[in-house]
Each structure stands twice: as C-alpha cells, then as structure tokens.
Image 1 (cartoon, rainbow, N blue to C red):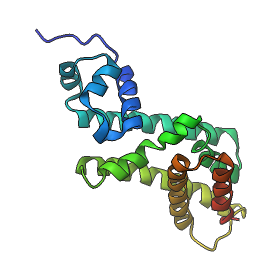
Image 2 (cartoon, helix red, strand yellow):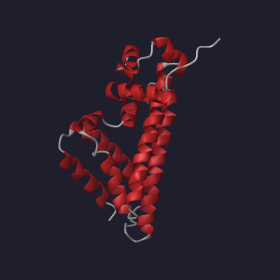
Image 3 (cartoon, one colour):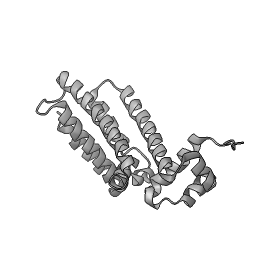
Image 4 (cartoon, rainbow, N blue to C red):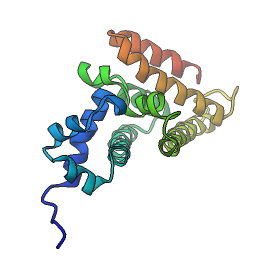
Length: 192
C-alpha cells in the first residue's frame, strides 16, 4: 500500500524556494532542503523526484507570485507609463534582505542556463512573457501618442526587459534605492 502524503506540497515548495533563492541551486544542499521543509530526504525524492525537479517547481511558484504582483501593478492605473514604472518599481520595492537576494530567474540564468538544458526553456518562456508585456504596454503608449516611435514597440519591449533584469541585478550590489530609482527614470525616459 503506497504511503499517504500528509503535507501540503505548495507549502513545501515555498519553503524550498526560500532555500534556493537565498543559496542558489548549486549551494543548496539536500540537507538545507530537509531542514527548511521538515521532510526527510526520501520524502523529498518520492514527492518531487529530484532536487532539480523541486527547483523547477520553485521557479514556477516564483513566476506565479511575480505575475500576481505585476497584475496588481497593472490594475492600479490606466496610464501605460505609470504601469511600466510600477513594474520596474517592483524590482526595488522589496525589503533590503529580499533586494540583496535579487531575482530568482536572474540567479537561475547566471547559474544554471549553461549547465542544465531543462531550465533554459523555463527561462526563455519567462523572458518572452515579460518582453511581450513590455511590448504591449509600449504599443499602447505609441498608439496613444504618449511614446515616441523612433523604435518599434518590440525593440523597446526588449530594451525594457533588459533594463528590468539589469535593475534586479544592480539591486543586489547597490545599497541606495535612490540610485535604483534613477536607473528606472533613465530607462523609461527613452520612451518619451
């Protein structure tokens, strides 16, 4: 008779996500995951398959949480410029400890993209969705005459994605939110 799981998988994923977010994939040991989740190794393997599979589930949870935060930003204003600024502000609105961790997707890209082929499609999909979001916002701004048309909405969308990722990385190093806010203002000023 198979063992019945008596734990909430989503709660375990959130606890594991914290481990991976603070240590990265390679430095997070199975013992770290055991300590954080309260599960033994065999339960982790039986329930999630492997450390890598658990990591991918953590990436999916992080993406869902990030998407909720982005959608909340979009609901607060009908102004596309304010929407873009609000999305960028998500990168620096976290508390100092979270800011130092940076973005789990950026960490994954620098640590895993060239090591583990199975995470690259996850990263590409996330990038594509963010680029499409920025592109659609720029297109609305261009259609309404708020943004210049020196470049296509797609080109600006790619630029904004790159700038957003750069701010997330800069936030790990810079200790001054005013500097990060200056980066945001400079990044969006190219649209006007």
